[in-house]
Image (cartoon, rainbow, N blue to C red; front, top):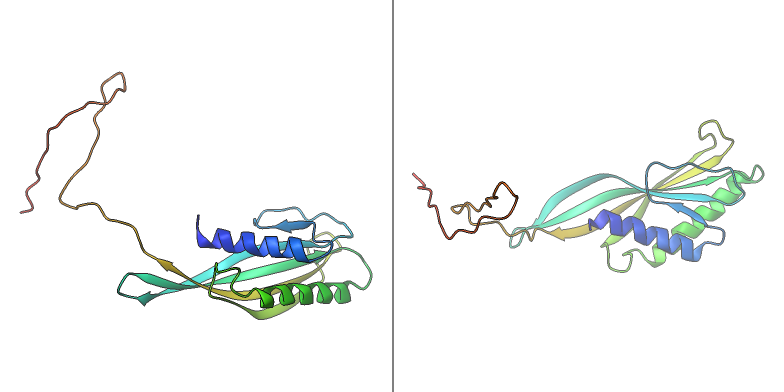
Length: 170
């Protein structure tokens, strides 16, 4: 499973388990936001940059941008409610800024407020985070001088053969 999936799932779990009323937390881009008194949270990953961190074994240092969006349609005190929910999200992620070891660091970089999300009267607040994590390139490469292939009979059963073909390199 790709680390970005684990990152989104962990943030979703933290929000669902620690914020009262966080019944709807989406981790996929396509979603319907229902007009409801309960807040709707979404966790999305965006642009990711990477660089080689270690040459010994190829390790990449990756920095993915994460947006946590809160949508609320309560109609009164919307800004205050969004700010209070954002503070709760921030507190949860400060206390768990490595997402239980999934990432190296999670840092809030920007918060923006939008009070018009399409045709519905919904207040919205987006919190952007930089999430740094490391991945090792562990793929084993096949012997590039050997060609492996399978033959099938017309009835789709495998052809078993001990024949080895050597391809000259020059």
